[in-house]
Image 1: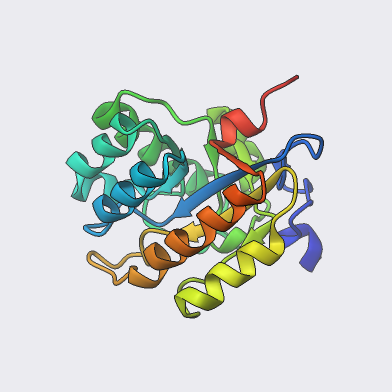
Image 2: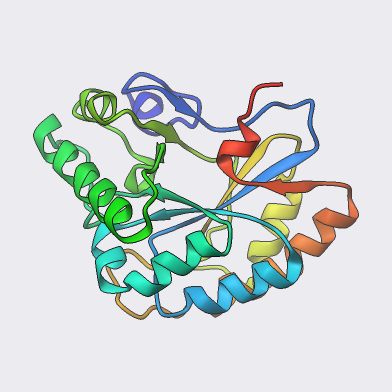
Length: 217
């Protein structure tokens, strides 16, 4: 049961991916829990490094910081769904999950003009209500190949985890927010990106959005 709920390759509770094709030297960089007041600094770093990312955003933060949500799209990054209020989805039914996902879809569509194609369950945990909800909205769930643990590790530790976890088709999970916090400290995340991305570029990896990573040949 534990694997079904949180296993990165599990599709028990709905269609899900955790990596892209392994024949292309590409990685998708993803960020959860935002947007936040610190996201613009992260966008600046990504612009300097010339790498795109996919942002799994909470609807409550999109409504709280609409101009930042717009900037994410304007900078060429991909918006995605990370529920509305960052709840625990386990033991929740389809109606609850559907409302959480739909409110974020509506917020992102209204504010950015983009309708997300992907969502990530909070904490990566899915439950029985998820399959019908994501199917009804038309979303594909996205897990990760490697997670930075950037809410608790130092920048050096986060960067090392991801560099060590790099492989063709990898999906990296980081955070530009901290759950429901309005103004979290994500300096270690930003510093980790500064350290990690150049190393992997030097190793020949290219960074893609989730959509580009999953594109058919």
